[in-house]
Length: 266
Image (tube, rainbow, N blue to C red; front, side, top):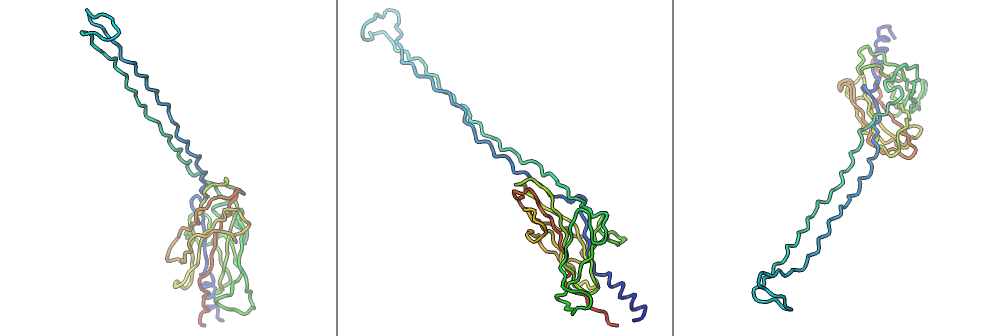
């Protein structure tokens, strides 16, 4: 292969990469369950005053006798009307404001080769150099390192994932954090894919395991997004989930090449 062709291949080899970066603040939004609303209390209503029997008032000239005599008038006393007091109702307690629970190293700083402080990495591998190659089902080992893109599509430090030229990758990163049991948690991050052939892209998604499992096997995944550089930076969101009794959640980011690259014609 000529030097010129080798240079072209080398450039194309770096064309298919995925970069992942945290948001300005990548957090789990933890929302403690609101306390039960107080049961309405009933205020005692005043007991109506008993009605006094009418009394006889004698006018001048009347004489007392077993029965009223002519000239006597009957004047009943006025009965007080009971006053009903309004029964107060309980005001439900407002839920507390969601409290952010920061991740460890949420912005992917100080990345060494295949080592990210605070995060675990994983990838599916069934192919190595020298093996029979199937462009639809061969996956090479993924490489995790600090992004060397000078444009820094995502603000701040950025994680870059790539693999062998023209071979697919399937990779994920995750970490587990403590969150109060019964809280409602959600996880978000930013991502972007770079591919040589923009008719394809990267399959990206974010997930969360509300029981804090080791890894992403039990994660609940958000919507998959197929993206490349034409889409710019996208937001990946895991579904909301209620934290289990263990008081831990595992957050996950997943990336897979949609199509294997094609070897260039020489």
